[in-house]
Picture 1 (cartoon, rainbow, N blue to C red):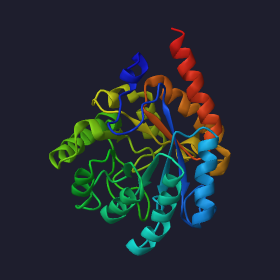
Picture 2 (cartoon, rainbow, N blue to C red; picture 1 turned 90 degrees about the horizontal axis):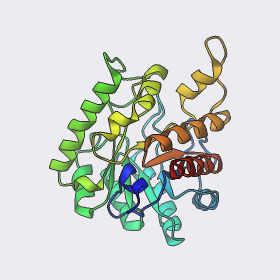
Picture 3 (cartoon, rainbow, N blue to C red; picture 1 turned 30 degrees about the vertical axis):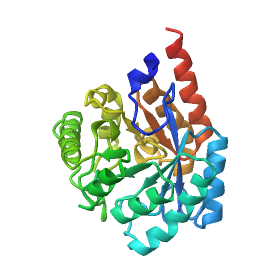
Picture 4 (cartoon, one colour; picture 1 turned 45 degrees about the vertical axis):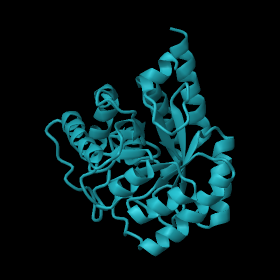
Length: 287
């Protein structure tokens, strides 16, 4: 294993990359904040996933439920209808698939259809059956920092020290997940940028990714097109650019995250980020 792989950590049962991995997003939803409705049928979603791989994605994260602030939850049957055929179609083409869900039933069906990673923004808190299902499957699991559903806006987004509190809360949640039967080398942590956090919180967490890495698990950074980037680009007086005009800023975060040792970055637009993480790796290799 190379120095870079040790530096970033490795997730059991997943491929090993010699640089920060690129996770492409496929939202099979009508209401996601940046691309809702664009890939809302199975054929279009599978094609989009394959296009992301062609552009440089190492794995593809398939989700059927928007987690933007104020989004209404879809029912279980509809989430299954959206997600499972897309996972099956991508996996049949050899794509390394993750499923983005808070429901144990969706995770279980997606894993059976070929997904190899469960990305739960609640870290297993939204559905008590999630951790047992993932543990029984022996699948890797993303534990994101989460303080509750975002219906109606930010939830408990008040911090004395956002970095210390997020690290402590993630540490406690990882301990609970391990106690629930998921092996430590199957766990990825995610600071939950934009979830119960404002722009200053998100920037502070990005500035201290080393503190998150000190938890001893690979780190996933999901900054793509988020509100804090719009805030940064707008400055103090301007209006934030639309979500789809934040891809260059997203690639900049990807380069920073890769340089800091993130295991993977989750993005909507792959090509620029794929270039960014490769440049970061080349600079790292020149030391």
